[in-house]
Image (cartoon, rainbow, N blue to C red; front, side, top):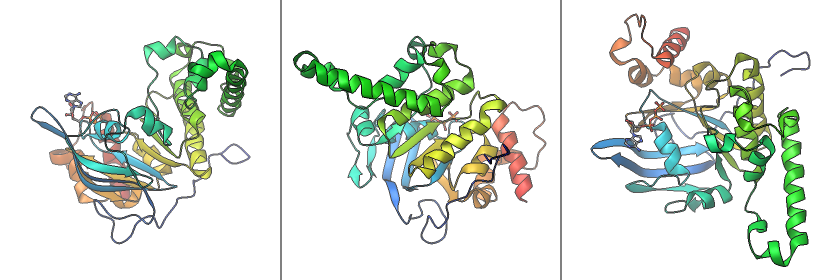
Length: 303
Ligand SMILES: Nc1ncnc2c1ncn2[C@@H]1O[C@H](COP(=O)(O)OP(=O)(O)OP(=O)(O)O)[C@@H](O)[C@H]1O
């Protein structure tokens, strides 16, 4: 946002890849490298990614039609699900068989939609839960209470400082369930920052967000990049993707079908096919598939 309150055009990070943009293209400085990652559910292949690299220090959008395998791939990368086969690295370290809590401790944090249980905690308690491993729960608590108390104070101070940055400080004692959709998204992001991540993975950051908070969320995501973090997000809001993503990876039927900067990707025939399939030239009429509509609009813009 500029000083006079009008949204500014974000500065895109370029020069991320080596060679022609295509599925699996090499990156100059990848933070995640995945190879042969496959996940099936019964007879259904949800994810079948031959090779993909996520560029460091940039904002990458993972897009694709419903059921493309985006969430499943997110879950695999973060240790919340196990693949049938494949290997993947974060910052040069293998993540295969590493449980979710250790992946998070290594600096790869994903946001979660606020569950019912977390809604019953205050905003401040939600933030404290996001802090890195706490010594409070072990021997120190009873043997060295002063250490535990000091750590508690530091965590609380940090939580309040981040809440202020996200303009949620006035809500710190409120139950998280009382927040609006947009405020919850801000809290999810704020909570992720409690553990000083290297890579932040956001699951549909714009879903359910009132337009009044959209700019604020976008600014916070751009801010993560300016602080040196890498961002990977799944999103159906194509305007947002085009506005802030430096790089876009497109999945369809479990596979990566295209990669490139937002302009390249939205004019790629493989992407048009993945989204619109047989509907490409048809009037979508009353179809309730909102993101297919949004994609069609943008593809038309590009042409
Ligand atoms: N636990 C599960 N059991 C069975 N099938 C599953 C499970 N999780 C996902 N699937 C199936 O795997 C496929 C990929 O689902 P996934 O949720 O990863 O797609 P997505 O791209 O995130 O979709 P959306 O954009 O709709 O969230 C879908 O066909 C889905 O029904």
